[in-house]
Image 1 (cartoon, one colour):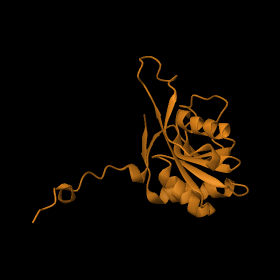
Image 2 (cartoon, one colour):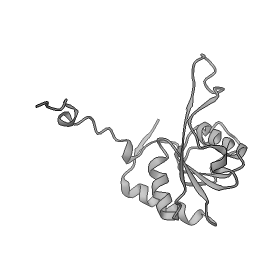
Image 3 (cartoon, helix red, strand yellow):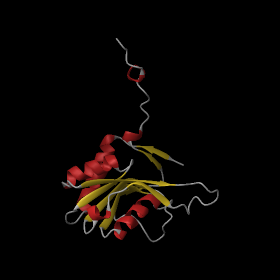
Length: 166
């Protein structure tokens, strides 16, 4: 699979592509950890969204040959009362298979929220959903995207040492 490494300037341009797409104000933003944290922060600032929430989702792969049918495990999610009735922008970095963001959207709808999904990159070639796509996306890709916040910075050997005791 082709890999594309993005710079911070390219991420800024993607945010600039997204912002004119939005109509009206959002009552809240729900960022999916970890990929949605940075783009969510940038969009929250650009759209002046102050009510920020997070969700952490994991798909268990315990049984062989049922990886696509695995149920999501919500490690972190806001209480229903916090999202009920709110127009909520759900942000992640990329829509690959679409499982995570779709699970979050469905759970929000079940809680009475009005979710709309947003990603920097949409990969329709990997999506498991033939009739679903993000409400908002900045670019379509078939590549594996490496965002600037994902670059392996390694461990600073000085900071990793045990503190000296007096």
